[in-house]
Image 1 (cartoon, one colour):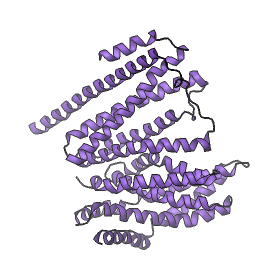
Image 2 (cartoon, each protein chain N blue to C red):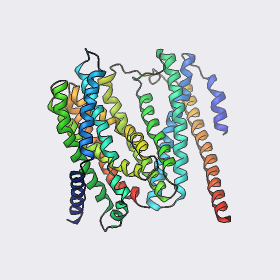
Image 3 (cartoon, chains in turn brown, yellow):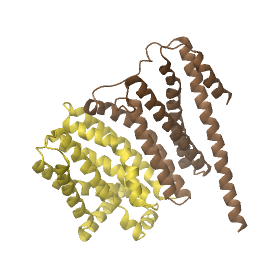
Image 4 (cartoon, rainbow over the protein chains, first blue to last red):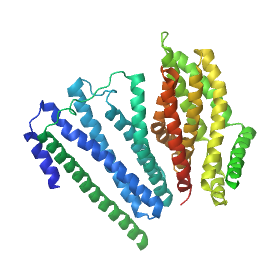
Length: 209
Length: 212
């Protein structure tokens, strides 16, 4: 948690080309954290299918939830950045943004799946398989979006941050990344504890009846 | 080999059931032709050929959804799926048999849809046909797995399109690309890659979807 506070307060100190470029320090770490959450969810899903240990189900579910939250934030920050850089709230030319839109749709359907099926081992298995499909989808979708650019949107828009990152910018970026990951981990363990408590409470209630 | 005998038996069961009851396939055929007619009215006069080709792919996608929605209905209504899972065959054989059945239905639907498209809109290229064939495999592979998932839930007619559409966006990209782009080989290769990745993934994970 200290890392997040540091990230939030330290960023304005780094020298930058323009003020609007600062959102890069939020947007990219948020995006990377989102990917990390989805990867974590898929890993937990794989562990569930391997070991049939039911506790991985909640871990995978919480990780997907975190991933979606950070995914929404990625879309929002990316949209703001698009607005300031190119004047539009949405640009199909930004590969990362389009990829996140597809992933958001995919993982939002994950929740629809979970709410539609009765709780139990069947639901846990299906959620795990779906989470694995998600991480397979990430590179395939990215490839598809790259291929689609030639068809649907000839102008590829990139942000001009890659070329000239100075030392202080790199440090700021890394601190922000660490901060975002710390934030995600904190929220994750919080929510997981809450969910486990919920399950335990329900079990106790049923045992009392 | 026992495995392929099982697969063949399951695929044959689905196709035979369909030819006896004749409910899904005529619906798919009628749907795709109606959709093409609607597209004609939906498009302004000077629409490009590429836009029309794109709409063909949308029609194929929703026809596949229609067929898939019916894929596990019989299994669910008559508890056949439990029986299938209990048989001493590899559970992935159920997926493969079902997917082959879905591909068969899609091909039959396209035998009608593609000539209809050529009639209503314009000539087809062989790349489009090749892309449709590759896309069928991908749609069936992913769709069969997702149909099994949706069948276990409550709002299954609503759930299947939600699960299906994000996963098949790459198929649409590959298919439309192969149909209209200057260098279709890349897109056909991409469709092949998608098919390989997701068919293997679906084949391996189907067991976990239908068992506890």
